[in-house]
Amino acid sequence: MEAFMFRTILFLAGLGVLLSAVGCGTSATQTPREAALAKLSPEDRILAESQGYCAVTSEPLGEMGPPLKLILNDKPIWICCSGCEKKAKSNPAKTVAHAEELTAKVAAKSTPKGAL
Image (cartoon, rainbow, N blue to C red; front, top):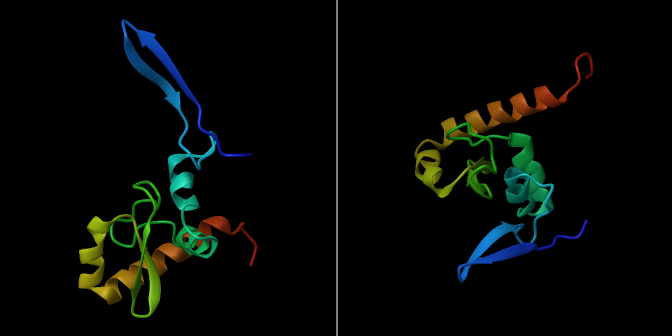
């Protein structure tokens, strides 16, 4: 489906009121999280989705806009926002370990029971 922008403006007493809008580059069926993740390159999106959650706050990636990629201990790590960067870099080993735990959690959720 082509991305589109749709606006309806109603004029009441000379004031323009925006009733609805779908932003450029997003589909009306995308959630804000999906739209944020769609802004990443295809390779980065796969990595971010496999981690699933911020390595600092454990909040779902993409809920605060496009997640940020850090390279810590030579590994790509995803955080939800620039506010998490300082804490992530303050203890890289802990951040990497937590990101690996999150990735394992996401993988376990997506693997059907009994499948290996």
